[in-house]
Image (tube, rainbow, N blue to C red; front, side, top):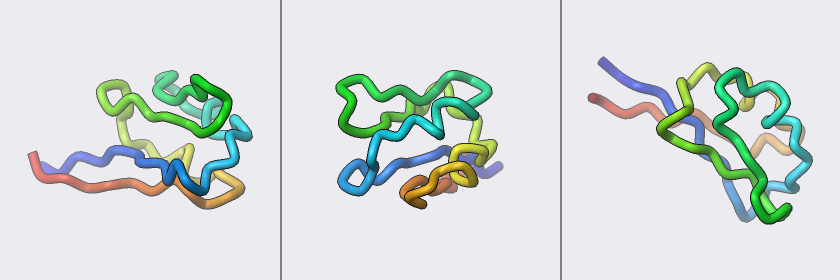
Length: 65
């Protein structure tokens, strides 16, 4: 079964925090205030962060497992 996980383009992220606010698992943080980081262990691939990101720099990666 395929699993989805969110990935953020750290070069383009503006660290606005919108994704953090909508993540139901608390998988997103902005540790140094520069860009968002996603904890792949906590991410469930719901896509809420992808929809919320105003810079469109978060995508869902699909992997087979």
